[in-house]
Length: 376
Image (cartoon, rainbow, N blue to C red; front, side):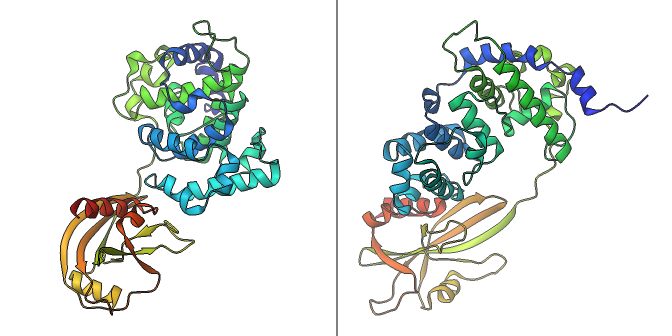
């Protein structure tokens, strides 16, 4: 017997047209009331999609609402100073996202007269926009039959269709994109929902239903299969393999890093430094710090290396956070600057507390700032 091909497996899997009505009707009654779902403005949808990369919905909501109040359109984003844009993003992390937002807005002004483009290729050409994001924006804002494939959708599709391959591998990933394409095309050919005539246009609703299903019911652990609108068609549920799919390769183990961070005060002002352009957290602010991973340095020793002065350090707090695969510990020390005459390192500034609160800080150093402010 010849080996089964991907095409033959797909033919035995649920037909897209059999899934679409149930997904659309379920989304009509189960969709969360998220603020960016109350608009078809492609700019607003674009901002939400970029914010939602690597970030949970509950975290994004207040950021999105504040952003839309402060920078309601492409023109406002282009005109905004970089530090204001970074301040609005402060705490969301992965700051390349917001830098690309502003670069893309500049491109929209230069190439599209300030109007958000409707075509998939034009959206895909914007900085920071990949295939998933372009599909999400164009399907939600314009009801274009463009597929989406993010982590939630991958989980839903691998379980529905019983796909055993690693979604990160080229062949399996292409198979998933094909399935996503067939589903949204089937939605484009479908009739409006019988349960709710006010449901978003079918391509928009179908793509959002897949994301919603993965976020709320078809979760990584403890999937809520009894509530799933397509449980009866799900291969993984039928075969008892929900917990095994998707078949993702193990993530690389986290690497620990340790820093000594110094909160230095002089006359009611604190010493801070701005990170250089081009690196991680570029142009954000932080307290002076030195990486001491693998070194058994006393804080006075690391302070001497960093600041070229001899000072006494008092423990203030410890802040732990994660950036990509790094688990970082900031051991924070409070320091009294030795004298007004002592010189400070280049690229540092003495600022009072109101000035500090107005600046965009890295997430860990914002937590340190809040701790310092609470203790004053």
